[in-house]
Image 1 (cartoon, rainbow, N blue to C red):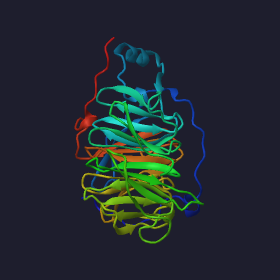
Image 2 (image 1 turned 90 degrees about the vertical axis):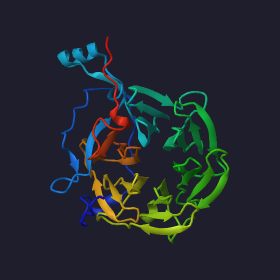
Image 3 (image 1 turned 135 degrees about the vertical axis):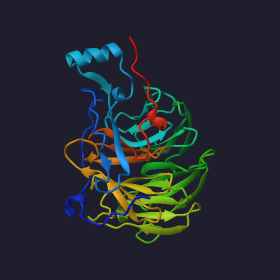
Image 4 (image 1 turned 180 degrees about the vertical axis):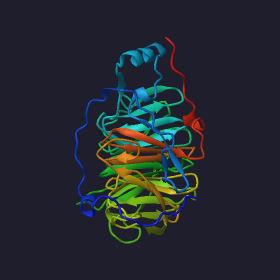
Length: 374
């Protein structure tokens, strides 16, 4: 059990926390940089003297962080200081993981980038004539590794198999106005798609589809401020108990529904204290049912119990990149081993944390290829 933290004030002023979305231009995905330096082995959360629950493991900026180096080139770089070339992230938004294969949507490059840590490979999804992507945002994977991508421009969810072959499309313009995210339930039967709506729209809801047939089943919510109503919903997650957790961004809360869409409760409110929200974005759940919520204004993710009690948080807002430093965090995912993956759009990276009791070589991400011989 993660211990409950006492309330305290977030570092950023509330006026800034409630400010509008930062605008920035994406840059070329091919970059040259020095190999990523390892972080201190004891970079743990929470900090001492509290018992550690998570440890920072690594950061992925691009293909060079996953694809093994040729041993001769690695020696040359060590002797000459030459930088390595890497295809990086231009404007990452969301992340999903299946057995060590990391899928990241890149809305600027218009495809999903795939980093397979165990196989040491880098590929792309949605950059060909079959199932092309236009503006991929939220994404999720089912138990088989099929990838569901919310394409805001296509106003549809594009479905691919684990290797990137296009399978089918769910939804379309008649169903969505401002598509933002997609969630697949653990058994792969239902797809929950978030329509964020807009200032002049009443279509602020979660639309539920049959995962296989694509048939529309029912909707959750409508625009409003009452229980079960939404104002700019951002993302959804399904907990261990089958309950549905939805980020209600404009109402600064998380709302909870049962599997059939019955409203149960909500937690959170606007503010600058721990447990409050300012710009909540994506949401995820772990194997014990705990709920993780990204807040772009706070520059962190907060961890709650299934009932909404604050347990702890990781990260801080910073203009300088580093482990758990964020300027514009967006996506979050918890894999089969309860490793945490956190996307930051500003620093163009994915930070990875593992449970403190999980060995570095354990789980799917612990299986890494050796450097390639010449």
